[in-house]
Length: 456
Image (cartoon, rainbow, N blue to C red; front, side, top):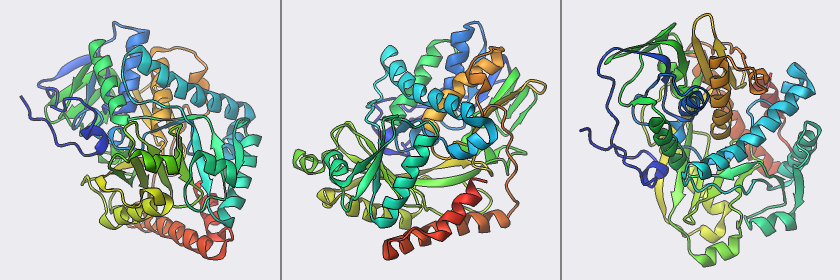
């Protein structure tokens, strides 16, 4: 029997599950649907396939173990966020497309909570919504504009909070206001993905771990241990898509790093508030995100770790200087927790398409389906994607199969070294924009230019 793996994140280390790998693929196999990747996308797809047709033979292959990638390393936000702006979706698909996609994502947040209760998976689901703190004059101006825009594009329950209202929810430092949306839940992401793996396995899905896919072809998945032949092959590899033959420029892997404090005592929480376990970010350009865990820790993560040449994904810890910056940001944002010990530091990659637009689709002529490009909003998006993929594969005509992201085709990223220079340059520019805004109190023109570049 294979030995249990060393957990690469706080979430996997504390999920209470046995991390001993399931048996790898041992020979060539035939099935109806082959899924590459045992993260949220692949496992939600498998779950909904078995619900639609329990007789389907579904095989999942995974390079490490279920949840080893972003599904077990993320910040634990199950949200209705979408990477592309609603303004852009409206320009391409009309307001009806915006509203249908928004409502589907909002329903998905509740569906995940209902699923956890139905299947007795304790993922520490707490739907407290999201607070986007405004700290300083530039962020206040941007937050006001963002709320107005969100309300125009269907965010009827998005609202502005003044500084008193915001601090009543969370007494963070320097808060001058906030935006609030109810459509987000804090979760323990590894508990969710590991529970999902158990549920689909009990439904008859075969999961082969320690079985890396080297290539996906029409009707075929190639691995070092044998081939999987199937009528349909699902690519559910997100930030690791670049490691598949022929997919090197489909999605780039961007690093997001995370840290967790020790459990904090009651007096700290009396100062902070944070009673509803809201997920938290602020209005800076170089994103940070946080949650209060069920065992009273603060988990905080953020972007800024350097993109690696030729889309490198090796290494679990990430970038030391970025972790140091995140620790500084945690102590600055939450002074009541300034003396807390950091017990865990980790990192992982997320998948980013060239046009920043998530996609889900099925090429019936080739028998290849895909979903991904969530740009860090994958906990909620992947649950909707899995449901949609199952409908597409089985020929169901549903509201989900006509949503604006269905069938979207990505343009390819530039070859190296142009890709490396461009991505690193954008990351550096966002950091510069944040520094200028803190110094001047005025919104950065540079950041506005970057937003237009990213959102087409």
